[in-house]
Image (cartoon, rainbow, N blue to C red; front, side):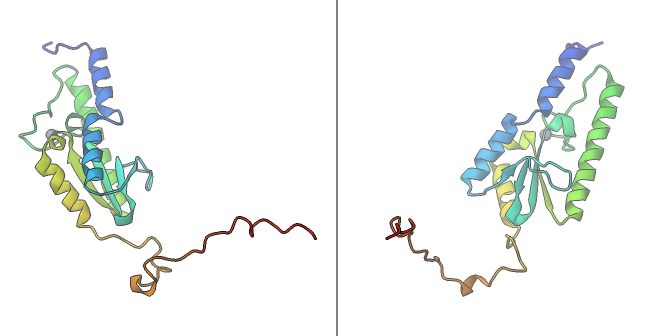
Length: 174
Ligand SMILES: [Zn+2]
């Protein structure tokens, strides 16, 4: 056995790879937030929980760990297969990629755009810029299309008179 980690150490390491709020995710959130995009985290859609959801554009973003989700890029510096328990890991990885494909299909069938950024790409400013452009390229949708008036039919700022705190108190009985 050439692997330097015990199976327990290996499992712990892999579990950490799966955990939420990982550094790659935080890098992506920070970048996109600074780029003016707003999102929700880990929102459930159709039984799928993408890492970030851009509801107004119906974009679901996954920040995929390269090892766990098998980044197909041959130049990826992270994707490798553990050298021990090869069958175990290969089965596990096959399960993961099959689940990823299923989730993507589910979201797309429900009218969502699915975007993926790989862990190794989150350290590359050009990739983050491209991701931001990809999300922005998806047009915003009105939240309730059937009821939304045309944008110009409404005044830019709706005036609401301030509530007079004295008048809003019921008058004392004379
Ligand atoms: Zn990668």
